[in-house]
Structure formats: structure tokens, C-alpha cells
Length: 333
Image (cartoon, rainbow, N blue to C red; front, side, top):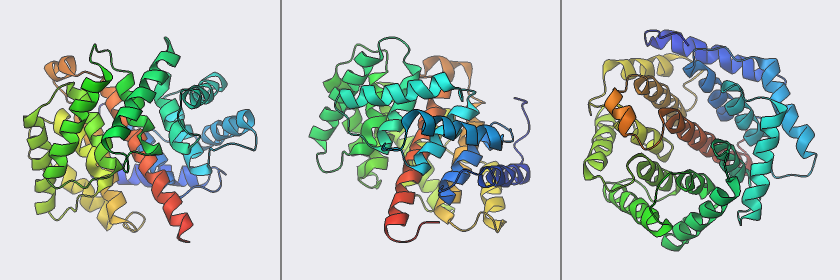
């Protein structure tokens, strides 16, 4: 991919072009949020999505799963986008996602759409995926013990990511670090919900230890955005956590605010302020990740690509949940 200057107008234009590619692909029953999420995946890579390849990938899931399964249209489209943007839109990889899903179910996870996101992340594990799935279940149960009324189907992604860490830390030690971040961010004003759990898990993945300065940095970024009249919502939490790591400064530059303003001014994007803010944060964060220093990359417990996969999976999961909630209340697109 070419290293181009971050141009807000170009990014918004590319985003809308990719949105139309998704919309005109013939893949039906997909919420507007999911269409934009898929469009964002390709925009961040400075690519135009191949609408036929996108449709073909969703068809692969349909053919291999048959009619009776837990995979809804929004999650299927999200997975197709995630696979296609990484050049993994082949029959073998789709089969691996489905096999990983069954492996997670056999390990104790429920048959839900969120388990498919965990199955997607499990693609990173080529060696002994069953061991990782079982460790993920143990981590999930430990998280549930800490927050029995909060931990739900969505947290399979956090559990899988922590289970994939190359560390000698026990399940108890990992979840203690996770609880530290959950508590500290909550004290700083972040809401107690699944997005906060995902932020805590992301923080654990990045550092594998308690880091009070990192917490302060995330909080400072959130406060700076609030002062700029950018309302921080749970959908933004994970991206803020990653941005706090990849960007050395706690001061956001004009580039982000230019992108946010360009999105705000476009009639095709301003239908949902919370969501277009999330897209702007995500696109900006991925651009900043490309500017990480060698020291940052070497000290990172997981790769930048994995961080981006985390952010993308979190966004897809949150968007799918929002779509389901809108549909159940009669507000689906």
C-alpha cells in the first residue's frame, strides 16, 4: 500500500465510494452501520472494495453452513469484509473460521454471532487451537466470576485474544491485570459495560502488567476530546486505548479534527454522530499506528496488525449488537 498523506477529503470520498460498493454488492439484509464498517476496512487500506468478491465471500459462508445456524446477515457481512481486506476470502479460510467456531462451542462457548468473531480471531492460532480455545474458556469463566452480570456472549473475543498471548502468566494473573484496568477506567468515568471490558482486555494485551501512566494517557485523550465537544461513548473506548499506545503525544493534532469535520459536513455520513466519530477515530488511529517508532513496535506484546484486528473486531461486534438492538425495537435499516 502506498504511503500517502492523510487527506480528510480523500478519505471521506473513498469511504463513500466503498459504502456504495457494499450497498450495490447484492448482499442483502445488512445494517447501514455494518456497511460503513466494511467500507471503512478498505478505506483504511486505501483500496476500493471488490463488490463481487465480497458477495462471493458471504456466499461461501452460506454454502458451508446451510440454512440452520447462528450466523446472521450483519455478522456474516462483517466477517466477509474482515477476511476480504486481508486476502483471506478463500474457501479454506472460511472453513477454518467455521471449524474454529465449532471448537469454541465444544470448549464451552455459546452458539452466538459473537462466537464467530472469536473464531475469526482464532485464525491467528495455527498450532494447537483447541488448547487456546480451552484456555479462552477458562479466562472467560474467570472474567464472569469477576463480573457475573456484565460478562456475556460478547466477551468471547476478549477471552480468545488473552488466551493467544505468549506468556507464562496464569489465568488468574491475567484476569487480575484485566480487572485493574477495568476498575481504573471506571473510576475515571468510563461506563461499566462490555466495551469497558474490551478496553481492559486490550490494555492487558498491550502491556501484560499494570501501567498507571497508560491509564492516565487514555483518560487525558478522552478529556481532550470532550473539551473539543466530541462526546465519548462506549463504542469509542477500544480505539482510544489503542490510540493512546500508538501515539506518543496526548494532544490530538488538527488532522483528526479535520477528518471529523469533513465527516460532519457530508450528508451521507452525519446520520449518526456517535458512529461517524467512531469511524474517524478508527481511521486516524490506524494511520497513527503506521508511524510507530521501532522501540514501540519492539516493546508491544502483540503486533500492530493484531491491534488493528482487535479494533476492527470490536467495532464489528459493537455495530452488530447495535443493529440487532435497532431491529428488535423496530428501528432497523
